[in-house]
Image (cartoon, rainbow over the protein chains, first blue to last red):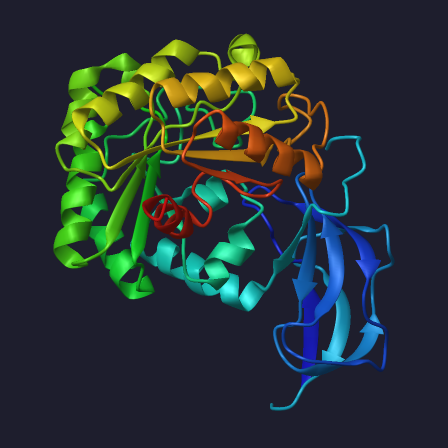
Length: 81
Length: 289
């Protein structure tokens, strides 16, 4: 199944986050818990983990982009429907 | 956002699925946590381990501390305490399987007892619902009202926590509405009342100097404060008190040595620790000293 990876809300008032570093690239197979990308917020850098085992298909944001919460930053394929 | 580049040690892991599980439970029960309200950087870690610090008495604070991300209550925004909140917290503690329950609050200077009776109700209800758990309360200063403090103390919390937050010279700018000596008196009174352990926390990076910190460590030893948590101030937004500097992990280790040398029994000192972070471990630690 196709999986949408989105910018998470890391705090209640968060409207967007700066995707500072990609830790994966298209074609990579990742396990649940692997770090996909890093987001810099006001207080810290958060390492965003994969929620499932999956294969990265495409990256939809570039390092340095300020991405609104909920917006797709990557697509992946995972087992299941 | 602070213009200072974040050092490499200010990194945390975040897993949305694991975070949402605890967040959903809190939302379902209509509970607030300081983890979300104060944008705690450790939220992902704590929620992953199924722990949280409950924040009672509402989501808005009557004080307006320059360092804090908890919203300040504007006129007409304060509501009466939720009389079911103690039962909801006990239910959440049971569902999460907590062995150590940490409860803090927004400061409610508008309430006659500052919300002390609600703290007491929460302690009673949690102990009734979850036998064997330990309870830590992270209280406000109750404006120095010792009768309010005694209402909490009468329930014998395992840990009485009240943060001094910063050195006295910065109180007017960082923590207006609070008084350094009054916060020391709260901790001192709690100890004299007979609480097992008192605890406090201080943030670094606000502009304090080493001499001031030495004096604080000495003050805390004088009042027999058992546990001290030393952490990095992280500026929540450009509207908050400006971050002066990031303190290195090595410096945190040195401050820990100094605080221990001053006579404080148990000290946790690191950039990302918070006064309620890994609280169960701190309690176990001080018990073994």
